[in-house]
Image (tube, rainbow, N blue to C red; front, side, top):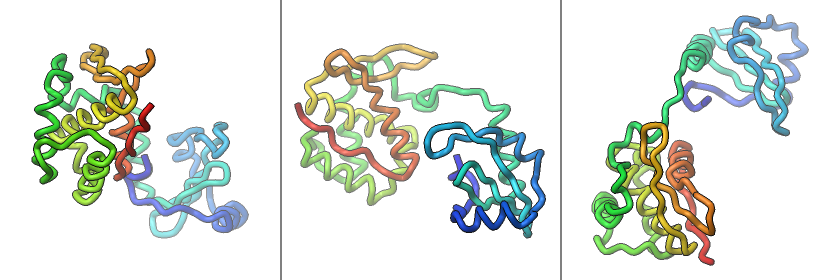
Length: 208
């Protein structure tokens, strides 16, 4: 969430100094932010302190950031009115025929990465794909037309390594492609999306 705005992490010493220096608390911003999860998973109240230059210190438990006030307030106001939507709604390539299209999608991915069309889903070739994704910038692969082929490749790699099967289920108005391994569904697209959103790439699956 904080990647959306300019923020700088606060050290333990800075947090201590802010709390003990008599800096004015911003109660309106504290209400906007609400409780946050501390390092141990427990919810703790937000503390927001006004800093010079139009910035605030947002602290929860023993963690905190220095952030521009208006961007901070705007972010939490937008979250308050946000209506959740399935992340796959923005990707037209996820259809009921997704699994049938996997070979073509993998060919598309290979072409976009500048790799051989007949690239396999072996661990060795997976590492080649991962390396190219990182070279080109993982976040780029969140774009429609790129995310679907990469999901197909990562999922097919997992399916073969773990001896699973594909399953496509219609839920929340979208088709979710998952890999089923020993009766358990793995929504590959979720883990991949989260990794790319953090400008990273998922690792290879372990064979069984």
